[in-house]
Structure formats: structure tokens, C-alpha cells
Length: 225
Image 1 (tube, rainbow, N blue to C red):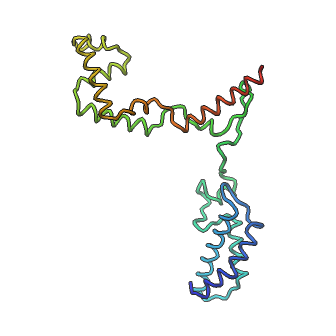
Image 2 (cartoon, rainbow, N blue to C red):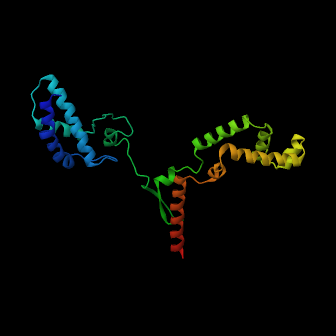
Image 3 (tube, rainbow, N blue to C red):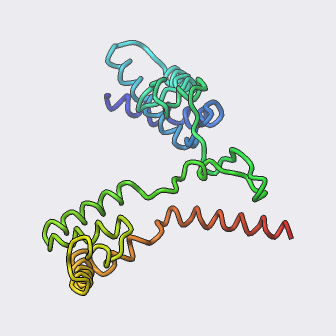
């Protein structure tokens, strides 16, 4: 783009777009007006560059007009896909929609409160990434320490007591108990003092959901009284 075309964009095309876009282009999804104005200016710059290279005649009004048409049809400076789930064109075609997690999707008569989309999507299970990372840490610990630690942990995971594990392995119970105590100390040293507390701490994202549910339940209980 030449300097002359750049001046034209800044002084004549951009002001037109700032005036037209808020009135003519409806935001889709999480878009806002300022974002749409900036997007339209980028599209205008792209069109101006192509027209200038082709040697065709144009006016600032032409560029602004067609830039607004592009925006209204769902085109954006970063793409114009109509198959991308999050694409503006796809949403304008009513083939997908972006909803807030606070969107009400149902009603719980027992709690006498609405059910939000976030509550339906929030998993009650542990984050797989955190679980996998903890398993890796545990595997590294067992690989570099007494092999009998693995036997004790396997017994605990299967619901057996230390006495049962000692009997199964043909070991003396006080020896297994002392080994278990030593393993606990070495785990704290290997993973850090906060490791055990972190493993049972409720994630912040899940805690906020729990607080919302408890608040709703309390409101419902007060209404019943």
C-alpha cells in the first residue's frame, strides 16, 4: 500500500467505517462494536491494497460500503469460514451458537432454582491432566525408592490394611508399619510438604461452582420455611 493510499484509509475510509459499522453490523457471539470497527478497517485496508495493485478506480465511499457488506455477511479480517463452529458466518447461518455458561437451560423444582449451562458441563471428576501428572510423579518416586513401597501402595489402593499386606507378603507387621512410616517421610521429602494437601484440595474452579450450588440450596431452603 502506498503512502497516499494509507492517508486515504486513515483520513477518509476509517471515519466512514466508525460511523457505519455500529449502526449496520450486528455483533455475533462475544464480539463488541469496537472490535467490529477495527475488523472493518482491516478489511478496508486489504481491499484498498488489492484495488490499488489492480489499477482500478475507486472512491473512499466504495471501499467503506463493500467493507460493511463483508462484515454484515459474516466475513472477518482473520477469515470467512462458514464451517468453523466458532466462525461468525456459521453462527449467522444458525448452524452454531455461542452461549454463556450462565445461560439458563432448565429448572430444578427441588431447589426451586434455574439450571445453568455451566452446571451441566462441569465435570464432577478430577481433572485428567492433574491425575496424570500425579501418576507420573508417583511412578518416578517408586522407580527410585524401595520396591516394597509399591507393594504397600498397591495394598492401600485395593483396600487392604497394613496387617493384611504384611500377611500376604510374609512380612513381619511391625517391619511393614515402620516401612510405611519411612515411605511417608520420603514422599514428603520427594514431592514437597504441600503435596498431600494439594492432592485433596478442591480446585478453585470447582470450589466456585460448589459455592454457587450451596448458595442456591440455602435460598431454596429458606423459601421452604
